[in-house]
Image (tube, rainbow over all chains, first blue to last red; front, side, top):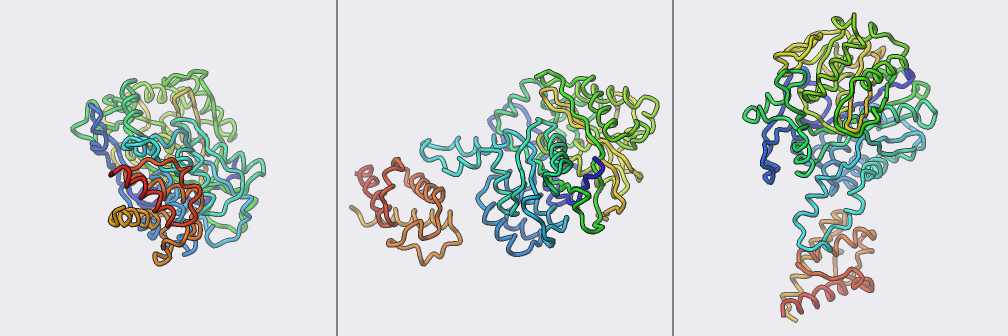
Amino acid sequence: MANVSITGLGAIGSFGQGISALQTSLYQGKSHFILSPLFPELDFPVVMAPIIEFDFQEALQKLNLPKELMLRAEKSGRRAPLTIQASLLAVLEAWQQANLTERNFCPERVGVVVAGNNTTQGYRTRMTSSLAELSHLSPTYALHFMDTDQIGTITEVLNIHGESFSVGGASASGNVALIQASRLIQQGTLDICLVVGVLADLSAFELQAFYNIGALGSRTFKEEPDKACRPFDVAHDGFILGQASGCVILQSLSSKKNKEPSFGYLGGAGFVLDANRSAESNYQGEVKAIQQALQQAALKPCDINYINTHGSSSPLGDTTEITAITAVFEDVMDRVWLNATKGIIGHCLWSAGILEAIATLLQINDQYLHPNLNLVHPIHPGRFVGQQPIPAEIRTAISHSFGFGGINTSVIFLRGENNVSWH
Amino acid sequence: MEKGLIETVWNKLKAAIIEVLPECDEQSITLHNSLKALGANSIDRAEIIILTLRRLNLKIPLIEFAQAQNLKDLVTIFSRVLDEVDG
């Protein structure tokens, strides 16, 4: 897989608009968790890191895109749901960064893989809950309710004609999408593939259900929202929702014409199912996924400098993960750095894997590791980054994502030759 | 039929057109023009009609609008039903 290069990044979330805003949040360990006022119908506290409020037109203008592209984006996205607008903003930032606004490309050789299923729950509830008459439902719901509206809109704005689709992997959707996109490139179907993580726009129903199965956190820290998300800490009590959209652009090395700096490479991946539909994490599945990734990348545990953990702040999930990591890394456990991006930006569900891939690449390129917020008493020994960022030369990293339904994924990232710094 | 009623309908229809087709020149939104000529595709046309229905708080099956040739025909259909409801 080391012939798949990463050439563009884009993001928007609770941290603000743009990769620089994400970088600042990560480096400074600045989170944006609040007690959300958006779900008055729920009788439990909802702590979350919501996406910043933005005006689509103003946000587009901040990207300084060529005029024609901006007009197309505005037309296609102006009345689109929040999830589409957020994806467009992340995609366009990445597209520009990869120089795709300037260079010629063959539209049939560019595609999009969107990470996320059932991404329109919040939209559906907003569109239907205040209808006096069902017949007054907007006809555009016919397009917007489908996850593939993401594909249709992004390819329309960017004139993309290559194979494109959405994939689902629950909380592992981001890694699943990266894996599928890299396969499209490796098998020669595409030269360039945009991988887009969809913002988690949940309705009260999903939150109520997550709460009912005990998965949702913040019972203990509802008065102090910034303390609620605590991956690997003894006081963790469930995942804390984050909202963000991210885009990673993959490109085959053979199609890169000049020595553009790349943010790194995909080195290998593991993708293993537990044969289990429940929400419970499984130690064996996680171990196998990590081992499979190492094998595919022809690496040994001692070659890995850093793990961007799944680290969801779930008691069972965190325990299973650190036990699995310890089992694989054994003797070199004291040499592998660990942190959890979810501690800063929350659990972004479908887009988590994409945001965490971006966080991994930013740290690799800028040679630091972000802090583990609220990690006061770790549940298990491990080389966890503390409450401050540290300088670190990372050459090889793994990012984990584990999803309900027994989905285990690990993706390996390698540093590129020309580091790209945001500082 | 009250003149005020027709004017209400016309204003709501016009507002819906501007909302769904902001690129459309407001001067060209006239009774003799059609949604298609203003640049509305089939989904836009359905959306403009349903937006207007929602704002007028009316229920009319979309099929009733199938024969409409221009905006005047649309206003007539909305107004007739609104008049029956009000009356």
